[in-house]
Length: 350
Image (tube, rainbow, N blue to C red; front, side):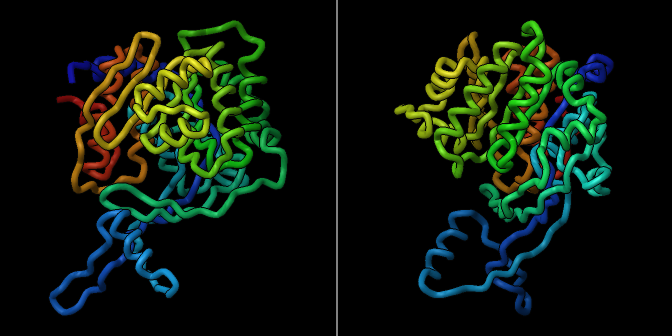
């Protein structure tokens, strides 16, 4: 890879990342296509398309599906990104839906500083070779979310975000209160401070298909305001890129074109786009592209994008070049998908 990260462990450990605000308990499952019979083993729907075609065939009928439960584990973007970043050696603080009064034991494995302000959401993740399908009920809070955050951190949340080398705000799409929390982070932590462009603000909206266009434009505008204070990075997968493009009225479906248009219209410093086959980094310096190492038979796909983002955060705070940042993110994510476990810095060495 050409990056001597092992020699930079002390520097990595000195970089402070603060992440908010989600947290889920995930049930990971595969959908059974045929049960075991005699010498024939149990088989599963291999792809989302094959599963979708089966469901379409059941239209105006009914069907029963069996799930093969593989694991119950921590879930959500904050836990995945934070755990991966912690394993890479970064100093990570999490403020999230990690437990009612204290962090749930499910999250204790995270090598991070944990502040729990609400119970985790519950979701079921259906795994396929070409992706995943998340099923989750809507999540609502009974009290003002920012007051819960302040209570969980003893009032320290504004300072924690302000003092971070990189703040990461994740999963805007699935949390109805995310916009208000992100607004408060900006107002309480950055609005009255001078710009610090050597520090970072990292954003992942997640699947925004269900959110109205007006709400999406509002959050993009907010990210642009963050970009006036820090170097702001918006991370999108391919679907999120195209959904965002439609929502804001862009005619192009070219990923680099969308990234450039979002930067120009909303003032976002950088747009990072990752797909199954390619990743792109659109910055004031231009567009950097890199092919993704495709894993035909993944051990796991849940959390792949989060591992990509965790490595992207590391590359940012270390000041790596655009090409190096893509190389690091792609390798870290592909190793996770290939082996089913979070890689270490040693694993990244070629």
